[in-house]
Image 1 (cartoon, rainbow, N blue to C red):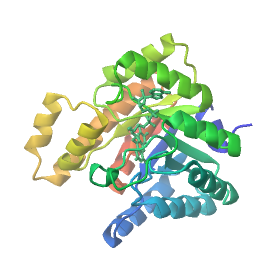
Image 2: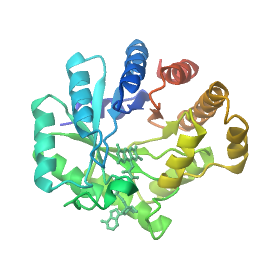
Image 3: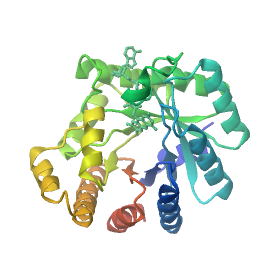
Length: 290
Ligand SMILES: Cc1cc2nc3c(=O)[nH]c(=O)nc-3n(C[C@H](O)[C@H](O)[C@H](O)COP(=O)(O)OP(=O)(O)OC[C@H]3O[C@@H](n4cnc5c(N)ncnc54)[C@H](O)[C@@H]3O)c2cc1C
């Protein structure tokens, strides 16, 4: 039996979904509220809520996911990470979600921030696939996992990373990719997975960057390449956030359009909690979702 969220991903129409961050300050809380209001008007198929592997946002993730589940206008997916958790803690979190009516998780290894990595306990589970199995064993969770089109930075080879993803997808229901900035990266990754016999849905994760400084940090951590031509463009609007945001939207629309034209099962927007960008991207892509 699958969850309503998984049924949508396996449905005939392409899905539109959005990643949100739980707020860390009052200013961020207000930004999130604006984003949620804009999203409510769009009605995304699902919304995923990130989880601080370093412990910073754990309770806020839980609170936001449960709140969205109670509101009922979208389907929430809770990110959950192996990092710095015992197995018993993860079981408890999953049981609490189950009791609160939350049916879907994104199972991740997690990247604790470097500055707190040494002070945190070592996670009892090592790989996202182990957490995916735990969730499947505990309740009837819909489970998504992360995919890395350019290979995960820790992987000894692209080949081994693809193989581990294939194994992970034998447990999980579908995957969402790390962000990327070239359609060719995504299409060649899909071809590789197809050659390995993977048939489960893989949703492209597309970022609409709003800050070059943040993007630089995120791409260093994730291994996602920012092509030189784009880096130059972002350099040129470093002091003009609105210009940067507009360029980010154009790039995201182009990547989503090309993925959807190639038959992607949906698109997942790394929204950086920007209501404006998400709305503009959705408006440009609307014909795909009707
Ligand atoms: C859509 C998406 C959402 C994300 N959300 C968050 C978030 O909310 N919080 C957060 O902290 N991070 C998040 N991340 C980042 C993620 O935690 C990191 O990319 C992390 O470094 C790897 O996570 P993973 O789940 O892909 O790991 P895994 O699937 O466990 O893979 C990690 C590495 O181990 C290798 N591997 C896998 N299985 C095995 C095995 N059995 N034996 C040997 N090697 C193996 C893989 O090839 C890879 O190199 C997100 C990433 C994506 C793509």
